[in-house]
Structures are given as structure tokens and as C-alpha cells.
Length: 568
Image (tube, rainbow, N blue to C red):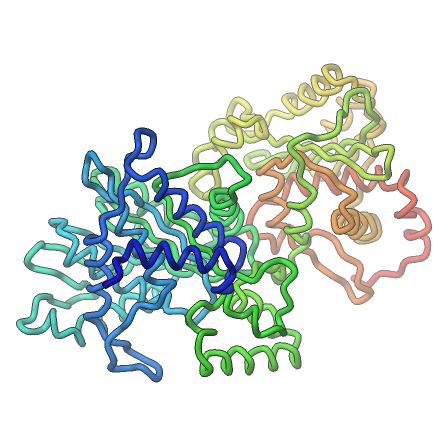
């Protein structure tokens, strides 16, 4: 009889050889497993593969029945991808402590590939079979309905499980599944139900469909409560999405991609990752590619027909293509409703080695906004090759700093440590800090500031002071007559890779927040009222680009203003 370890070895080799069709990141995960086996229980790799522990969880899965679909009522037989993922998660053990190696799991895969079924098996195992006393298992989601999907699957599984019903080994009451023998519980946790996580001590946290989470709040609640556990487990399972500024893409997907990539130096021995997606240049119409994102669904004809029907509808109705790409092909797509920037194009413009900007001419944009919130100064540098380089720096009052961290749910503290944000004394932004920062950057780098463009709102005194200091201040009227063509032009430059930026995460976050409003003549401008998060660094950047674009042959601002007609 083949051991789990041998199965994983054979599976990995088949994936790498191409006998099993898989995407690049799937191949990388298999390469990682083979490399780990080579290092098993060595001095610098204190983990070994315990076949019995891996087999025990997979056996647990077989005790449950499919709850829906054509296999409803039949016992679960783990698919090869499930064996590979959960064989890894439960098989690797620390040789000295005996605790599990992996305390965090990320699995990204297309819809209808047993995500919820797998999560349900993990939840019941962690609460009832893993040997932990007073285990707390939470299913985290932003909406109660989403959290309840997994909880109801767990309930249905255990109610149909002979092992747990002869005699009955659990209680269900008040949306809680309880295991009396170990005094363990399984509960749904959602943001909209007002759960704060106070007093939580999770043994296992489950995040279902992380792409839908606008912030990392639920994740942080679960993660912060696990400190007292010796071998906790956080499991994130999701499809791709179309909100590229949400933490699933902006933070987690970016990180796990680097973690898997053998050409990167990123390492995290406690984090297991599997990504099943279409590769960048794959044809969605080629059915041979579908199994990359659908290792279970596309392995049988019924699943292929489902994908075939969905594709046919997406091709006929363009509005449905976004969901087909994200949910079925597991491709992250920048099709946010009203979103300003193609965030993948913006990411592609990032560079760790920004061109030397010393002694260069630049244009500055200022967005002072509310004095208690984020304020920004952004810089645009025309380069000799037709590109532009951009920089940005933000400011926030010290007294509201921690309050804003809680309300905005973003790492302002990290951004401050990395030099992208300055806190100013007091409860309001002291504009003298901005004046001092601009002068400092000018002097230290030899920048030749041609003009400073500013939103006149709240900026009269600031503009007068800067003019007194010798700067050319240009009022940027905040309407489509002034802003539409530069706003479009900057986006076009990004799409054509003629913008370069230093991967400033605060600026990138703001860029992802930006949405536009469009008039009847398709003139656009950033819409602060509809941007759910702060966009001040981007507004400042556009103010700078309004002036910089006048030296750009691609944007003839003066002729545009003279010829355009507008609808208000």
C-alpha cells in the first residue's frame, strides 16, 4: 500500500514533468515539497514528514459524506489536490516539539473545487479529533451569510457522519457546534454581526473567500488571539477577485507568490501555499487550460460542461466575463466598479531601483484635504526617455494617528517606519511640516521645482507662504475642464509603462482606492465622495501631473481645454 509520503512524491513529480497539467505556482509548490523532503530533519530544517498524522486527517475526511451535487450522500474520497494540500499541512512535524510545522495555509482555487467541503473537514477535525482541549474554531467572513455557508456545511457533514452519531458526540445550539468531550466549539464570526474578537483564543481560524474582505480586520482578530496556542492553524481559502486593493491581493497574494517563487529569497517555513490559476498568457477558450484553476471541477465531464456553459455566457454577455475570469479561471482582474487605475499595470511600473532623480526638474502637487486626516505632497519628474518618475509623501496628525489606524484598517505605522508618512504634532496637520519637507527634499537632492500645483480648498495661506519662499504656485481648479485630460493621460502612461514609481505601498493603496466620475462627454476626474478609502496622495499626484503634462507631447492640455465641451 502506497504511503501518503510516496503519493505526494509521485504527485509532485507528475506535476513538474507535465503529466499532470498545472499552473506555474502549482509547480512551484510541488518543487518546494521535493526540496523539503531532501532537507528532512536536517540541522537547518527541523521538520520531518509523519505519514500517520497525514493519513489520520485524510481518513477523517472520508468519514463525511458529500452534502450536495451528484455525489450527495456518498462518502468523500479526497481528490489528489486535497491529498497534496492537507497531506502537507498535517504531515509535516517539528522533530523536537512534535508540533505541526504549518500554522498558516493559503489555497486559491476556482469555484466549485471543494473549498467549503475542505474547510468544513478542517474545522471539525480541529475541534473534535486533533487532541486539543477547549479548542475554539471560528469561520471568519465580512458578512454573516458568508460565514454561515461554511458553518452550515460543517453542521450538515457531522449530522450525516456515522462516526459522530453512534452515539452522538456533539451538540448544536445557538449557532454553536460543541464537542463535549473536549469542551471545544465551532462558531461563525462576521464583521457585520459586531464581533470584536475580545477574549477569543482560537485554535483554528478559517477565512473563506478572503478576496471579498475589504480590510484585514477579521484576519487580524483571529491571528491576534492565537498567541496562547502551541500549534494554531489559520486557513485562508479563496478565489481570485476584482478588488485588487483588498488585502487578499494587495498583501496576501503578493506575499505567497514571492514565497513560492524559487527565484525569490522570501522564506516562511510555517506557511503552506497552493495557488491554482490560469497562467498569464493562457487562452481561456482552450479547455486544456481549465484544469490549472480547477483541479477537481475540470477533472470530469460534468465540471467541464459547467465551465463551458459559463464561458459561452461570458463571451455573449461581456458584463459576465469579470466573474468568469475571477471565479472560474481564478485570475485576478482589475475591473472594480468605477476604479481609476489598472492596478496590475501600476504594479508593473514599480521598481526597486528608481532612476537617479538628483538635480532633476520636477513638478509638485499638494492635496491638503481635511486638517485631521491624511495630507499629501506628490512629485512628478519628466525623464529624458519620455517616461515620468513619481514620488509621494503623506502627513497625518500625531493625535489622530492611532485612531486612523483603527478606522482605516491599514498599517500606517509600517508606512511611517518605511519613510512614506510623517506624523505632525498636535491634532491637526501642521502645514509647516509640508513646507519643510518640500524644502528639505529640494536641498538634499538638488531638485529643481518648476511649479507647485495645489487644490485651492484650505490652501490659501499655505500658497501665500510658499510664494513668499520663492516657489511658483499654480491653483489647480478641481473640475473636469482642468483635470480630465491629465487624469486620463497619466493612466495611459501607466498602461504603456511610461511611469516609474518606487513601490510606495501607501501611494499604491491610495491608487487602488481611487474611483472616477464620468460626465456625458466621457470626461473624468477622481471622485472623492465615492472613494471608500483615502486617495489624497493620488489627488496630489494628479495636481502635479496637470502641470507636468504641459511639457508632455502626449497631452496637449491647452488645446484640450479650448475645444472641450462639458456636461455638469
